[in-house]
Figure 1 (cartoon, rainbow, N blue to C red):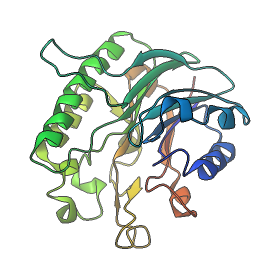
Figure 2 (cartoon, helix red, strand yellow):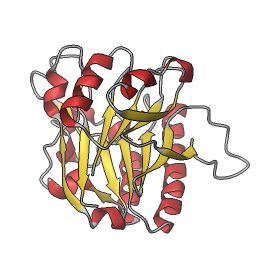
Figure 3 (cartoon, rainbow, N blue to C red):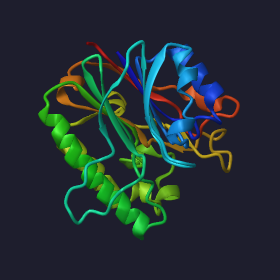
Figure 4 (cartoon, rainbow, N blue to C red):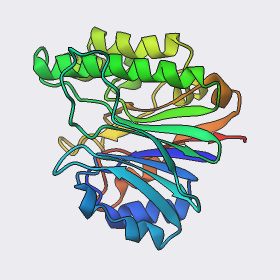
Length: 261
């Protein structure tokens, strides 16, 4: 079972590239981020034409997540992250969607970027990560195969960026961001790509600016975290890097994990 994640950077703008990738690689589950479409504008019918059923959580102009499944309907289990308490401010960002597909619980996340930091956007990022951790505790307790995948907007370690100094002031690399991500791993979740590439040097994002793609100046922020029940079935994981080099591509490449179920 292949579970993939792709920050598509605008589902309408990248639709030809997205359909191309789906048909060429055929993941069982495809989680999309930065859909940038209201619910009523989501092109579900285009995915249906090639055999994918979809659920989505949209928002006008930015954010937005979706889960596609090949040949089956994803059964939605959670939309948006629960608030931790009565003092939590309401959160109307479309950043979290969760569903059951063929016996696996799949969560699709688009974690806040957090820039500029310090400031309210960074505070929101860290608070969101606390809420994500709480939801992942609930998923852990189910004792079923779970995959929490998407754009985490965290560069976990220096080995995950082409030049640590170039990103040193960015919210993606701050100690607080890294610590929050490390706590998820400390809870027992497995970072699939890191597990199979312990030396690092694997990128999932290349900026549109300054020839980053041509110079391979990238970093890893798209992650696939597995519960023990899923990690026990880990076969392979990787990055579909070539799709970043195609015409009118997203600035992210798709990432995927293969489980033996």
